[in-house]
Each structure stands twice: as structure tokens, then as C-alpha cells.
Image 1 (cartoon, rainbow, N blue to C red):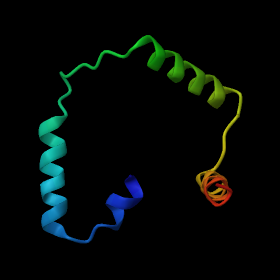
Image 2: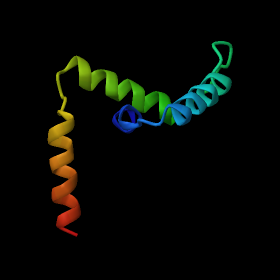
Image 3: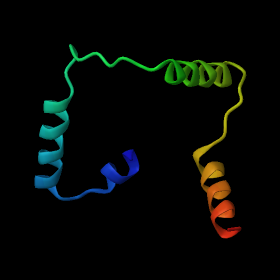
Image 4: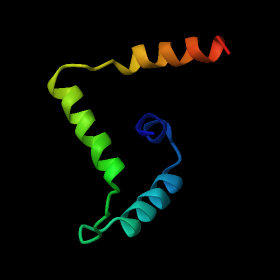
Length: 70
């Protein structure tokens, strides 16, 4: 998502996107997570702590291999 946003050159579009994001996100807005979401975040934290990571490039290759193997 970030790469896609960084690739946008249209200034008006970026300004509109900025306004949209600013209006939809407020520091006072709290999001209640489901227990499954909390569990997934905990698992992610454990993966980070145990160095079980994969680069974006490696993940892209894996995804392409999976897509081509369909």
C-alpha cells in the first residue's frame, strides 16, 4: 500500500487522500480488537522476537511461485 501511495504523482489526488485519511483517523478513536486479532498480533510479536522474518522481496517471489503453480 505504501509503495502504491509513494508512486502517485497527482498532487490533487494526494491532497484529497490526505484529507480523507486525516478525517477518518483521530487519536481519540479506539478500535476494539477481537480475541483472534489479539492472538495474531501476539504471534506476530513472537515471530519478530524470535527472528522468524521474511523480506518483502522473498515474500513477493513466494507469492509469484504460488500464483504460477495454480
